[in-house]
Length: 226
Image 1 (tube, rainbow, N blue to C red):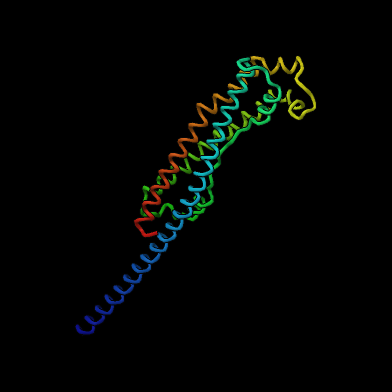
Image 2 (cartoon, helix red, strand yellow):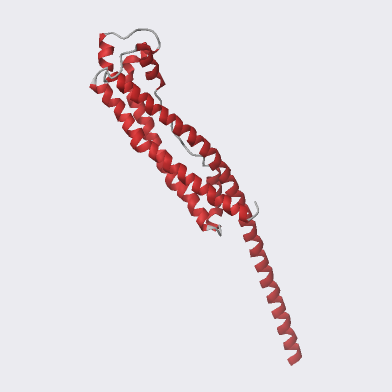
C-alpha cells in the first residue's frame, strides 16, 4: 500500500513538474516572440525617424527662408528699401507656412498591438513615447497655429494685392498706401515673431529628441546584433 502511494505521489509530482515546465517554456516562447516583434517595432520606428529627420531639416531650412522673406517685405513696408513693385509682388506670392507633421505609422502599430508596454528596455520606450506623445503633439499644435496665422495674413492683408500678383493690375496710390501702412507691417511682424520665437524653437526641440531616440534605438539594436 505504501509503495503504491509512493509511486502515485512520484507520478503526480512528475506530471506536475512536466506541466510546470511546459507552462514555463510556453511563457518563455511567448515572451521571446514578443521581444522579437518589439525589435521589429524599434527598427520600423527608427527607419521612420530617419525619414522624419530629413524632412524636419528641409522644413527648418524653408522656415528660415520664410523668415528672411518676411524681413525683406517688412523693410519694403517701412521704407528701409526702395519700393520695387515686381520684387514685392513676387515676395508676397512666395510667403508660405512650411510646417512639419511627423510620421506615426510604425509608432501607432506598436502602441495598438500593446507590445511597446512589454518591452524590457523601458528607457527606449520612454524616449519613443516622449518623442511621439510630447514633442510631436506639441509641434503639431504649433504647426496648426502657424498655418492659421498665414491664412489670416493672406485673407485679411494680402487680399488687396492678388490681382497685382497675377499681373492684372499695377500698384496704384491706394494699394501702395496699404502696403506701406503700419497695419501691414504689424501683420507681417505678427507672423515673423511667431516663427522666430516659437515655431523654430519647437522644430529644434523636436529634432533633438528625434536624434536622442534614434541613438537609443541604434545602441540597443547594435547590442542585440540587429
